[in-house]
Amino acid sequence: MKHLRLSVSINAPAEEVFRGFTDWPAQGEWMLGTAVQTVDGPATGVGGELAAWSGVGPIGFWDTMVITEWDDPNRVVVRHTGRVVRGDGIMEVVPSIGGGSVFWWGELLELPLGAVGRMGWPLVRPGFAAGVRLSLDRFARLVERGRWRIPPETGG
Picture 1: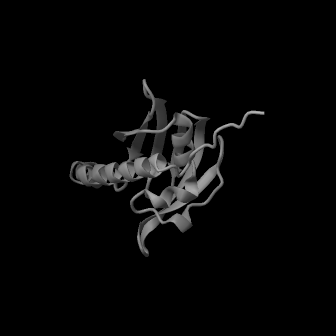
Picture 2: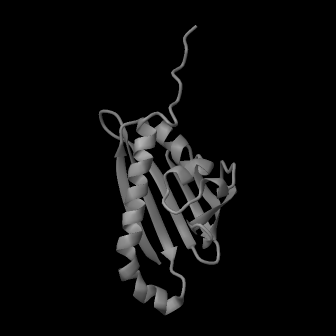
């Protein structure tokens, strides 16, 4: 198992960040290599299933997942169940002192191709991490621009 964990600070409440990262069909707007029209949903809660086409154009694979943890508005864990990607994806949001949030993205991966995959990980990891970093920065900008803004409650 190989682990990758990255975070991004977002100037938005945790509830809006959670709404954003669990808006599975919109993931293609910010996640590098994920086509928006190929994310299936809705999947809200333990046992929910989703699939995403990961790749560029026709070159890629289906990344199938099952939600194994759902703690709204804090954490979601998905189990990757496909033939290429296996392991757990962990998405967490933590409120920051003074406002805003920190969004954590983690992957605990079972590498494909056995020993070849394990030997190749040190070469692939920097590029994979750079792609996730770019994606997290895109996500932060979308959230901060109000893409998942929760309307204020009206009194009355």
